[in-house]
Image 1 (tube, rainbow, N blue to C red):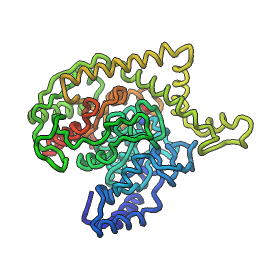
Image 2 (image 1 turned 180 degrees about the vertical axis):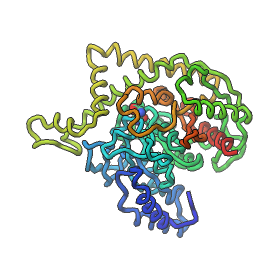
Image 3 (image 1 turned 90 degrees about the horizontal axis):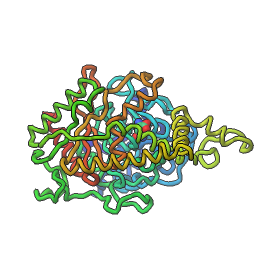
Image 4 (image 1 turned 120 degrees about the horizontal axis):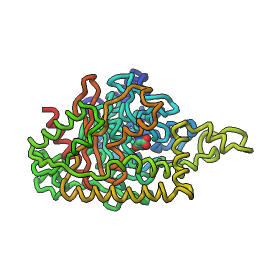
Length: 474
Ligand code: GLN
């Protein structure tokens, strides 16, 4: 975040950058009131009344509501829809002085791993424009990776922040479920959805998280202890270093216990990702961590469990888009206009998920699929809880490969879904997880590695990620 220019100048820079990078297709809507908002920020700075995030530019995924700005969820069915209220995260950031500069392109209703399912066309990866940026929060990842915005908000239901962060070479953080309010986020799979942050460094990430981690009475799943814990340090205990401003503990990683995956869990990973993973673990050992192999007995159940639960919840959540209440309506309001509106308004991937979700919830198959997936979810959460009694952090790849070419996986849905292998479990278990940029492959495409930790240890996770970054930079 560059403090040497005025916020008004920063906004004209932003608008120029948006123009210059229009081929990336990262944005759906640009805030039309930026000039007056920037002027207010400049006045506050001049008067010595700057708020904690004064003039910070935030790109917001287009499934998060900003009053007065169209909200599309990347779908034709919502094209032109004007929401009537701000999401809680938007309220909190605006009150802290941040500027909501734009709404970002995304996979339709956050369903996808490549940003190719958007009604507004694919987003392109700034590191190679023939490649996908990842999804579903691809536009938010690109906005930060291309340096157009300071930070961005995304939503992560099964990896949609971490995976595009990895593909674009930025940080992507999914907090513990319940620490950031989902009020004003269009639901995909409510028990898995979590709003999180993209940034170019951990300081920005921490500053934004400090503002948006807050209990919210408008979200019944918001946790009463959601607020940022200034006293947490890298050991997750009270901070005894007298670090009054709550910034990162810059001590080495002494005594952090890190779990690593056995080699068999890395089968299918690109060799360069495995090398980066091993290098990171090596760095951690050198910095005083204790690294040990951990058992994750049910890894093969992660993807099926996720896709059953996520599609079941999606089929119910998306029932509200009927051509009556929101956005696009086909026909004259008589005959089959609900069917016609949904047929016309939803894309192929969304229809696939609604059909699968309806099937797994149907009376004849409920026990065989949905109930079993709920049971598997419990086993996965239990396995994580047990593992976190022996390690503080689990290190794993974010993705099995780096960014793939646009169009490469669109014909093979299963291979697309399998690309979420390492990310979905954090949502199933509700735990915090972060993807950190860790070098590039031979083609110059970014590699992202992931750290996960127990529920409510988000502050510790950010501290550890910061230390790893320092290691990577040296
Ligand atoms: N790629 C996953 C999916 O398609 C995750 C999506 C998400 O996190 N929103 O379901």
